[in-house]
Image (cartoon, rainbow, N blue to C red; front, side, top):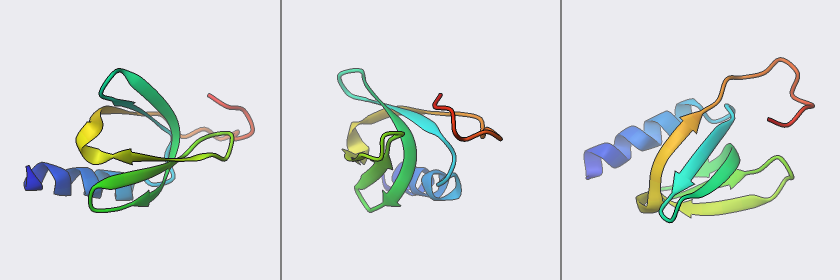
Length: 75
C-alpha cells in the first residue's frame, strides 16, 4: 500500500497544474487542479475557486485531462 501511495504522490505532484477529474468511493466526481498534496489527502481547487479536501484512500481513479491553450473556458 505504501508503494502505491508514493506513486500516487509522485503523479499528483508532477501533474500539479494539469486539469483532472477525480472519482471517489460512492461515485462522486470532482474536477479541478491539485492545490496541495499531503501524506493522506489531496486539496483540489475547482473551476469556481473552491478548495475540496479528498482523502487518498477514498480515490478510485483519476482521469487526467489535456492541457488547453485557452484556459478561460471551463471543461
